[in-house]
Length: 437
Figure 1 (cartoon, rainbow, N blue to C red):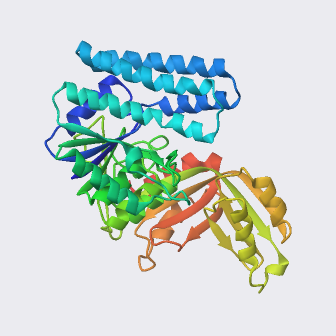
Figure 2 (figure 1 turned 90 degrees about the vertical axis):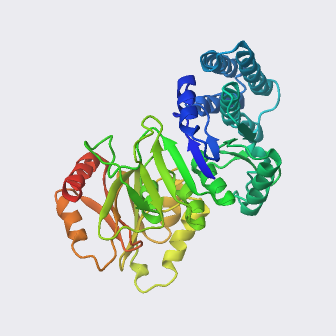
Figure 3 (figure 1 turned 180 degrees about the vertical axis):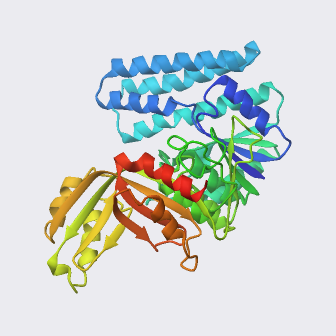
């Protein structure tokens, strides 16, 4: 059995849903994981924001507009009056549920219930479409098997046991449809996976059922060797290792979320990235296979802040780094890069929500400098120490770019450089010319 995940763009309209139905209609048994239709989750977040402010008129306006959009898609999706009516009744039921929060108290629990509606609607509409066209399908409600524990981590054993029970109860269908992103928490309340959303759901499901393959269908033909928004003539990468894919995803490749590949890696299940708009394109295969002696790709992560702590007391003083890291931990702020010297340490963060508090606490241990508008450029490939010359090639490519920090050796697959945001496009193009062209 395979797991196929389709993102919001892939199911963003009635026509897109019909194209997805063609892709999955090949006779192979599969679980199809769907996101909400594109734009829906943003609208639901906006509705929640109005409800927090008790602006019920503002919330109702967005609710009405979104409902009207769905009704139009229903009329395009189905051919028969029976299924058009079923689709409209479904839409009415979900939007009446959303409207119910305009008269009751609104908290984060209600917000998560609202955010779940996008996936619940898209899967039900798609299931109806398959039924109307005589396809053998069944719904697997994610809220019946997908759960996170008290630490907001997936409850792996619960997921595995319950999804297998549901599949057994449903019988031997060819197509099972389920929701990405949404789940229940340890207390049984509606919640979501946040990190990686539907990609994470697909990977968890694939690991739980020991799938033959996990396919992530998006609007681009696999992971590219550079960012096509800034670099012309980028190429899709045929093969990546799990570690390379995770590095690229973490450092800016938007096609995949870094956490979403972990369950597949642990279960050793290959992940294939494919393009809904070009279903015959080869895409990218992510597996445990490591390609030797090659540079795979370049990615860039925006919105980086660099923080340097200089302290004469650091010289030969054990415990200094622990104190620094504890400050970031206390504000739940992850560190991306780190470099050290005898008298200082530099780190980067991409979440500056608590920057002022962090800087004030760091001043207890030394002088602090902050640089904003930085970018991490990450070169990923086979970078083990025995491979000579790669570092020289990389640095030669960007010899005229100012480098703020360098991180190398933390992984065999990644060399990271911190540069000014204004130099990003030039750096990406120079690296492409030198490494791939």
